[in-house]
Amino acid sequence: MIKNIVVIGAGTMGNGIAHTFAQSGFKVNLVDISQDALDRGLKTITTNLDRIIAKGNLTEEQKAETLGNITTFTALQDAVGSADLIVEAATENQELKLKIFGQMDEFAPENCILATNTSSISITKIAAATKRADKVIGMHFMNPVPIMKLVEIIKGYSTSKETFDSIYEMSKTLGKVPVEVNDYPGFVANRILMPMINESIETLYNGVAGVEEIDTVMKLGMAHPMGPLQLADFIGLDVCLAILNVMYDGFKNPKYAPNPLLVNMVMAGKLGVKSGEGFYDYSESKKAEKVAKMFSK
Image 1: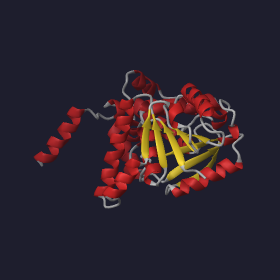
Image 2: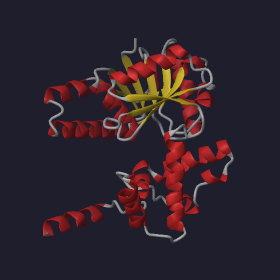
Image 3: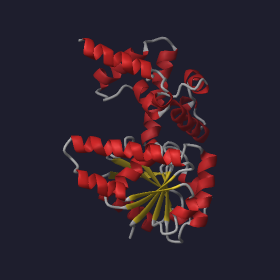
């Protein structure tokens, strides 16, 4: 039975995953390489819990219980001794993930399931970095994790039925809707989403329309809650580029080749919300300008 969870990575996805497990009553060890990163992650979790309270969907007592379920660590070896499940949510970098899975395999208990939140990298390849390929599986949560219901459950070539069934059923206890997916580059969500984002960037690159115009067409014409360029900013342009590269390498199909504008923006450090600028401006000065306009009305 899965009781003790370890989440590796306190960034956007990691803190959201830790939040979700902790709010569902699981004991969570949250791991990152620096205490500053852990402190930022806990601050984000606290802020998000306060938002849920403001909507009347959580009590102060439940917030305290949720935060009390989370313990932070800067050393992986110290965090995984009693783990039943480890969820890796580090940067979407294949070399890094393989290294982390080798360490997880070395330090975690023999029966511990090793899961990855990768959005595109082969589960089979990740499992090959361990000696327990039958216990390696993909759990691709959607952002923001505490709100989004979907979890793609991805089986690697050697993932056992026992491992799959355990993670599939446990995902339901988190209030999520698990969907079984096979191990192909991009899985389902990003295999469909990333070419759309890439084509939106291509449309901008070719001068067909501007950023806001493209997003408006998709929001009003296709009933998307967020335009594809704004969504790319929200995901992180570096993450979008990494996923497209994985799919391009995996399928050898030019339709997955990243647009040159995306490549150049990432090289220039314009990564979207996380850097303060992407297709839109998220800088503090811009935020202040928006607030001023609100109060001048």
